[in-house]
Length: 136
Image (tube, rainbow, N blue to C red; front, side, top):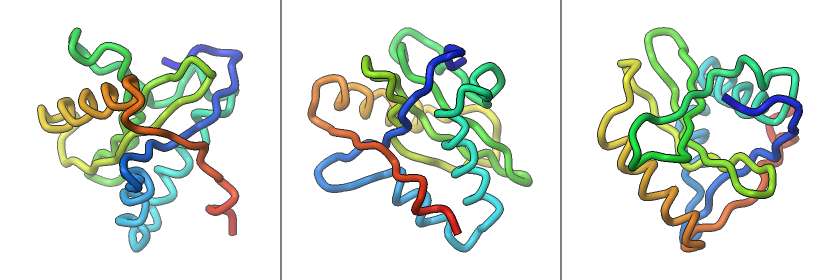
């Protein structure tokens, strides 16, 4: 769960010029319900009113220490975005995925771990998400 009372800057990871979260959002552009659910979930991460009850959870297991996921259900699909917290009150989203089952797959877990390690070693960067781009 997100600690209450802290306002986080929601960021996205950048790895060698690629923005996996932006790519995920782009894949949802024709599915307005899923797109809206993901953007709304990402916005909630920075809003202290939602910190006690957002759909976030820790990934279980020592290899995944420090990795959380933002989860939304849209119809019969689960939308997942793993993230880590930086030391600067930033929640850094790493990528997004759509699944038909609630449990994360080993592929998802291992990709999240690899990206966390790249962020922690500074092989990957991150930048704040400009939510005004989603306003109509």
